[in-house]
Length: 330
Image (cartoon, rainbow, N blue to C red; front, side, top):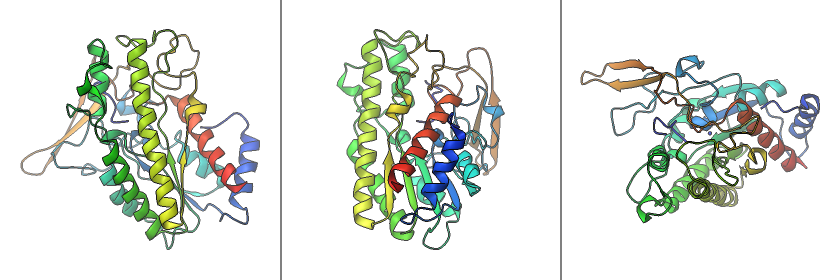
């Protein structure tokens, strides 16, 4: 979420069945054939978490991508993984075009620029947009972002107790999401939009043995914040669909990630990474406008893969995406 926590966005088993179902849903009389799949959003769409080292990703995007009000570009640029993320894999199954614009660290206000970069044609007929967005917009009462809030929970006791640690801007996020989804639906009335949820990161059992420094109560608190954010995403998609008439829908991933969170140390195949160590890329803009890049590495350098989906987690995302389209067609 989000932008990988320096402090602290799926081939399913039955591929043959999946491909058949995908083709059936895409040719259903009520739904146009999917000719292109556009991947927008943040790190949960770009593929952060698949690799330990930032240097292992396929693409970090252009050096000028995503500058906001500050001069900093984000901890490891876009971290795009083009082969293992749901959008490109689903496009390959359908023999459709894949357009990949998602970038780690993206916030809601950057989605219009991503939409323009995607080059969606006409009214959006035959285009499926998938995205995760909103996690990087979270702020606590003390104005910490989500990665900093996670770091606070790891490094201090009882982070779930102080009022200053509660998320403070869910209403603002909902309004911004509604505005963003409505703009897409108004401009491209025939597009299909699937707003993918965020998974519960921790999923503690009796304790959280998989994440050093996190208690069960703190793990539950973190997952509750994810649930609250997902509720706003779902509400925003419902409102946008009614206002525009476009096929804009929320896709839950709670069932797909169930019992596979970072806390589950003994789980054979966790879908969410705990703290991961590896190299990271940082970009900054000098006074003369030059972009400077430098890599950080070392045994205690926290990787941007931390608290992001593993490869198996992205499998689960693809499963959820496919299921949402099948349910809609049915």
